[in-house]
Length: 205
Image 1 (tube, helix red, strand yellow):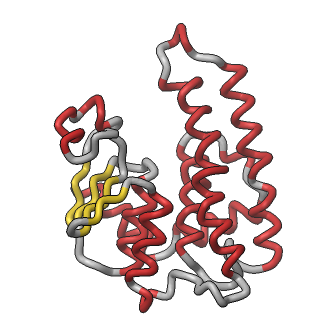
Image 2: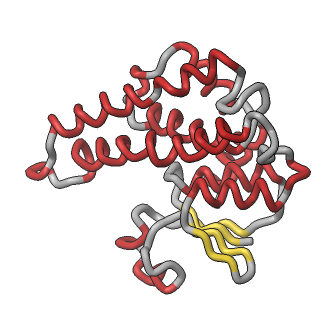
């Protein structure tokens, strides 16, 4: 397998999942955004986005889908929840909530607070989406009252999806919106051996 990656972006989900399942892979790290910094990358992915996971004829570009693919292809890792399991709904919801609901407002916040040229930045829009992110964290607090992880007692790839969003909040300086339970959850996730290996891998490539 080969993962095209930019440090600390959504592709970190895929990198972390690869370390959790324990398979061999090649890591290709590019400056962000690769569609601008590495134009030749569009020959691999016409969208120019990362992540891109290549596994034989399979090519995947959605970070949460890559996590699900790896967990289901490597069931011995114990990172997926089966459809007959009572936790299955929470598991799928958390997996997609992390990307579709939590990372989206962060991306808008970053665009209008940092990525746009100074004359195009919109402080009010950035603040609105910071608050939008905070409001969408409420679901996770409810889950953590019921178990140690997003889908119950056990760690799954749903925690990679939601955990990345919390990690990103810390990196971009909006983690003051995290509740004490969410901060504790993030600390437990980032202490995992696979998370630490993923950090080390991206720092050495």
